[in-house]
Image (cartoon, rainbow, N blue to C red):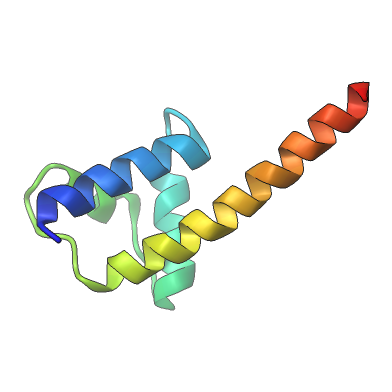
Amino acid sequence: MTNDDRVARLRRLGELLYGERWQSDMAAALSGEAGRTIRQGQVSTWLGGHRPMPEWTDAALARIAAMGAARLRRQADEAEALFG
C-alpha cells in the first residue's frame, strides 16, 4: 500500500467515524491502538505528506474501522427503535 493510499484511508475513515473535526478523535483512537500517545499534530503531519504514515497504522485503522462500524450500527439501531 502506498502512503497516498494510507492517507486517503485515514482521511475517509476519520470523516466517517468522527465528522468534520475528526483529527483529534482519530489521534486518540490511534493512541489506544499504539499504546502510546499519538497527537493531532502527528495526524496532521501525515495528512500533509510531511512524513509517511507508519505501516503499523494499517492494522490499527482496520481495528478502529471495525469498532467504529459496530458503534454506528448500534446507534442506527437505537435511532430506528425510537420510532419503530
